[in-house]
Image (cartoon, rainbow, N blue to C red; front, side):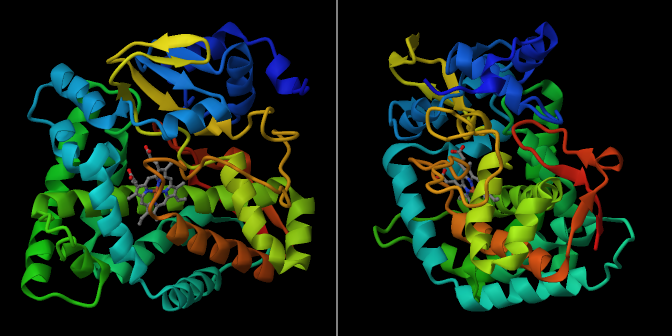
Length: 413
Ligand code: HEM
């Protein structure tokens, strides 16, 4: 029997009510003891606010991630039924995270082929130089906000480098990223749907001319490579490319990485002894990044999908048509898989966290995410002797399904 003190916590009714409203507990300073207590009751819970099943256990989440009996398209159909067909949910049918089966597998292979041609050593050098330049302005002992300094501009710069969009052209697009991301939350309203519609209109206006330009005049960049039709002859339409760029670069990449950069700093500030060990031993950068990803993942839950037939899980039957998500943030602390799951241990090995969703929809950008995450941690350990976080003056991001900081005030030595 694994002893997990947090799991024995008696849930306050306010915490249970908050979980029932939105299981990701947006903006909560520490949702993990609440997840642990819910998971100890049952690793599969029904959430009234999201109207879906929430998987909290690690083995149950892994089974879900590999199970083709769940359909993302079917979940979108439910949203289309609820909000009408003229909305973002209809456009998202072409978006990789919402595709299923054979068409999904084909597009994944195409993206993997295009990503394989990325010149990783030059991208790494670009990333490290960019970080070094941004950190240059920091003075020891003077508080600064890491978000505008590094977390916001780093993924934008890397994305521009990869797909060839000048960063200063992107301001209007970037303003709409949170609304786009929000429209993929677990809970939806008329208002979140309308802001999602507005975001996709802005993306369309901005990216379609760029896509047309590249079709006419291909360059040596990722966007041009994504345009080449896959070997099986499937045509990649402008709308699909638009979705790919908007969803995967301007949401997956720009958004999640921004959150990861803040969480990396916060983890180092909260665990000075771990930071000290990292400073002394650069070989710990990789394992430390994995532990941060496990301990406080930027994407707390997966996109929802709906069961296409009755599915037995954790002693319940998920009925055909019911929607389901895996709460990765909870599964990453499952005491059946991780010793001392609430402890932050940079040398944790093995560390089978689920933060990149290993399964049918495994993150295709994980190598890029790891490249940037390692470069940030390495820069911290080489430049700073200690990191202090002014948590009271900082703000957590409040949105659905994602976790990190909108403002992170640090002081370094
Ligand atoms: C810290 C950074 C990142 C995290 C934590 C992250 C996490 C995830 C997660 C959890 C999923 C699964 C979503 C689901 O099944 O609902 C996913 C999917 C995906 N991610 Fe990432 N991601 C990150 C960065 C990136 C980057 C940099 C890119 C690309 C440039 C990217 C591209 C994708 C794509 C294309 C998918 C969809 C795969 C599919 O549905 O088959 N991600 N990511």
